Amino acid sequence: MSAETRTYEVRTYGCQMNVHDSERIAGLLEDAGYAPVNPDETADIVVFNTCAVRENADNKLYGNLGHLAPVKKNRPGMQIAVGGCLAQKDQGDIVKKAPWVDVVFGTHNIGSLPALLERSRHNKSAEVELLESLEVFPSTLPTKRDSTYAGWVSISVGCNNTCTFCIVPALRGKEKDRRPGEVLAEVEALVAEGVLEVTLLGQNVNSYGVEFGDRFAFGKLLRACGSIEGLERVRFTSPHPKDFTDDVIAAMAETPNVCPQLHMPLQSGSDAVLKAMKRSYRSDKYLGIIEKVRAAMPHAAITTDIIVGFPGETEEDFQETLRVVREARFSAAFTFQYSIRPGTPAATMPDQVPKAVVQDRYNRLIAELEQIMWDENKSQVGQTVEVLVAVGEGRKDSETGRMSGRARDGRLVHFTAREGVRPGDIIETVVTYAAPHHLNADGEILSHRKTRAGDAWEAGKAVKTKGTMLGLPSVGVPAPLPQVNACG
Image (spheres, helix red, strand yellow):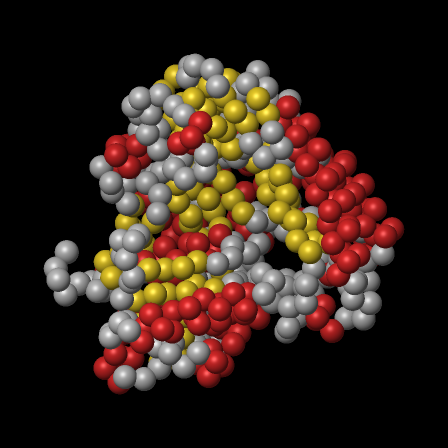
């Protein structure tokens, strides 16, 4: 690295879409000549990729910006940029509240960041640029991926739903679908770099195809992923129950590299609350989908999102959520206490539930889930699991002499470390102990397969892919997906 090379750091908040956007941001900055900062140093450019969904997102951002103000004052040439959903929402207010910020960019113009940074340096003034609609699909941008063995692949951006608690459609716009060929080209490019696992990303993956008029496009895409040689695991997140079709379940069950895992947000088990949320399905339909998934894949792990304390939620409504939780038997859940998000319809609804009541219900939900998750994980004891070895999954691995990774169904497995096993490799081992949130395998490793992803990790090589330069969806019917032989 030359003495003049400027360094960068990207700080990410929020969902998987933001994590993937941050990979794009890093790729753009490195293409523009910047280098990642060393962990113990202060970067010349700090980029905040923000979330507007989480509680106190504004306070967290402005608090962190406040901490950087004196650092920047004492570091000539340092720049601060703010992007993501909160930037799209607050726009020019960010510079008013934090005038030491140099660049504000939105969810629709990530690709403008290097030019905005340069313009801000030249003009010695803040640059604020936010677009109201997507001009370039993010996948046309270069990407610096954190992992050598797993990668995110966007199949769509935006959302056409109108859930009353969610501000995402206002910030990311209407759904835009990529053409199947573009998605598969990006997956193939990742596999060529040694990546073994991809996660297909969208705000609502199973409405994929809405733009080009094929309601079965997502199932076809899953099957097409099954024909990519070297791709060992396919996951996706998140589907919406209202759009879930039987052909997707069949594609999951019949495509060997599609993992037996389903993350499907429930949000509430009360039909009255679901109606107020504008979720467009009811608890019976939700449970019916799970029943079909388990009939096709008996050992599938099903995870979910649940919100407690939505406006108007009664104790009876909450009991309905507990009922669905008991019937669904989730292996994991992301749980949230409802809090007002300005700009959403729910923010002005009557009958906001008192904080103390929300907290009590949340505690009871967690207790119920913990027991169910523990029981579900106990059923794994004695089972042989295939683990894709990861890095950074087990915070106590160095103390316990273990390594960690994910089983095919997404469960976290801590296993006895063995010399020569690297992140990105595949091992088989037997589960010896279960906790609510993880499994231990403290016996011998039954098999160990070295992979190209493990080679890349050992060589210190991050996966970097050029943009798949195929742009936004165009008008007309897309070319058909390749024919795939289904196997049972």
